[in-house]
Image 1 (cartoon, helix red, strand yellow):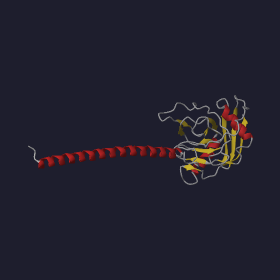
Image 2 (spheres, helix red, strand yellow; image 1 turned 90 degrees about the horizontal axis):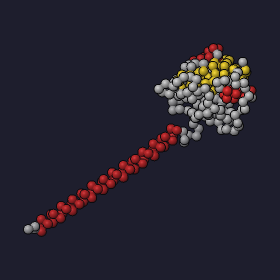
Image 3 (cartoon, one colour; image 1 turned 180 degrees about the vertical axis):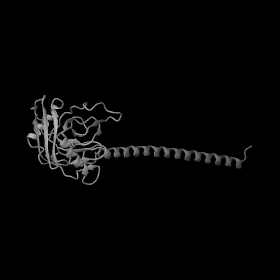
Image 4 (cartoon, one colour; image 1 turned 60 degrees about the horizontal axis):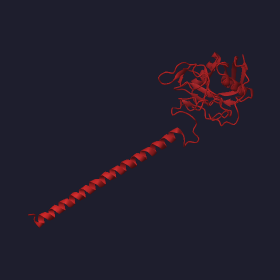
Length: 260
């Protein structure tokens, strides 16, 4: 027979066990809520970091890669005018002559390979578009280029229209990193990183440079021009960094395009 004292102890034990069970259940639910909240916070933080890295919150950010020397980039120029009508001989070769404060830089352009690009540059040069413009960017690591063709001299300007990419397979098959070599002396279009987004900005390669085959190669610099370019590169950037305005200022005093 169970005594009253034993009964009280049994009831107390059962009550204690119920309390422990409820407390364990409460702790489990608390951990679940914390895990859900933590996951949600992680998603929000990851999203915000992605947006910041992607430049969504940086209105003044230029269109460049995380590695500043990774891409010859050009910020998009709002389309305010149509691209020029075709007015060149597509079977001809043309010379782009840049008279600059660092010396004369000439390069040959083959209209048969890049008709849209050559036509655009001739149209712009005939209007004096490149006259008194600065070559605003020099890179000295990763890729080795001097970038020019921006009427604002900031990397933000353009002609008000974009042209189609051309001749992208001319430098061979990409390697495992998706890159090809843009040889020293190559002239190619800068762009925003998106297809068919080139405007007036272009880059002059002074040393072999590995890049994705996304930049229209349309010119070949002559020996004298390449030597002048190498002298500019030798002086480095104005702030001593790997990507910035050249220490030796380069201004295009006159840019002309003529048929050979």
